[in-house]
Image 1 (cartoon, rainbow, N blue to C red):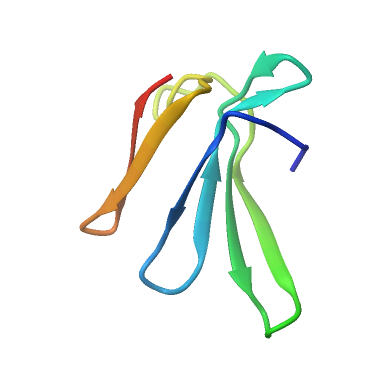
Image 2: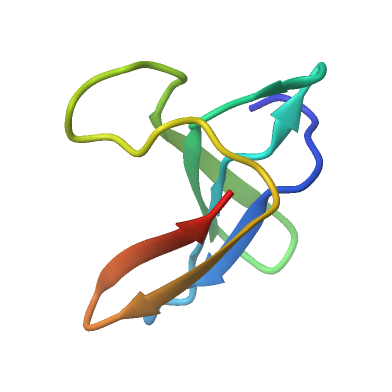
Length: 78
């Protein structure tokens, strides 16, 4: 996962969190990563989807908002 700005983060019920979108090197991205704590000192990350144009992935966006409801991740705006 690359350094970014104007992205969103949402907590999940299992204690992990998702990071989506933002600007990377001046371009909008639709990368989605899930982060979880392996222990009190280590954060594990897993890139769920990389920047692509598959039909089931949201388009690249930045300056957006997000929410988790009923175990689903929603993004708004951008």
